[in-house]
Image 1: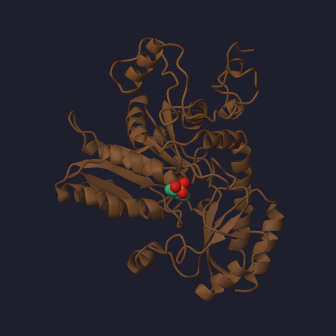
Image 2: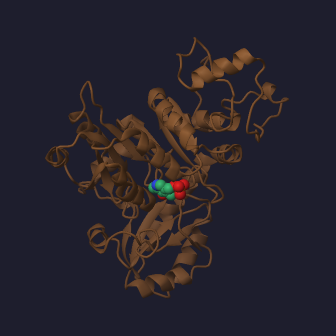
Length: 415
Ligand SMILES: *Cc1c(COP(=O)(O)O)cnc(C)c1O
């Protein structure tokens, strides 16, 4: 038998990074509900601040001491260490929302006069931040769609004459499950990088992470999460995360300190609790989604099902699916036969599945993208992306699959 073994993330989620002897032997990490920490002596306070403000390099084996909960807190640090295991990241920063993780990261890596290239569609909040906030600070922006080639993207970026700051990608796209090739985005960013200027690749991995897609392994510099979704997984907490190399996350954490959008100890504690069951939850959700997708695909009131598990080998997206994803996930959309009235009739007659936005939670959720999550998307973009009045988005939970199928079937009778 091997002496040492590299344990799987799911085996470490109950204990990693926590030392009971530092907390009266408590088996579980307590909630460190404190704003500030006592220094043993003034010299320690001085040393901690030197590190926190980057005034000197760390000594060998030196760790940043606890100062103040906007800078660090044991719950936050242990959670961040645990989250790095899934993506095999060097470092992680956790935030009080997915939006604060995304906005802080974008602000850190884009500059006035530089270009942000972003996949379309992106999450509504990200879309608004990119189009209406970043542009106020003189950042140039340009969208791109699934299926555009590397050569086309390079040509488009060159035509702007602006330095490329970042390629920002959300894959699979919501709610259409369109796939973007992360390796290709890396190649585009590298094409515009040199000794003096580096273009970064950031991936919003909320839909598939941290279990089924690992963007850092495909060349991304940064991976972002709304931890409100699968990571939290119980629809009871709003949070976000950014992961990457120690050097890049240090930059993100420094801006986080001054924006003050770190997660508090209670949020961090809830997420640690959620992480213990992350893998079994997500696996069951994916198994349920496959059964639900099969049922919908064979139903006479359903026109089309958007589910990654149905990608055909001759589809141009198939090689990306094979290379990038470990599962078809638990998010699917479908078009009912009819229009908005039929879609609403379906939603209004659901008994077990809840009518609500958000995703990735233990309970199944259904919503109407055209008038809800994507209400803000222009008519032309909706038409191009296939977000129509007959589309329903479903986030599949951990309920019994046959119960879910029964509920969807009885609600479909009203279409
Ligand atoms: C929910 C979501 C966000 C925003 O996260 P919040 O936690 O609501 O701030 C960003 N990206 C994606 C893909 C999301 O689903």
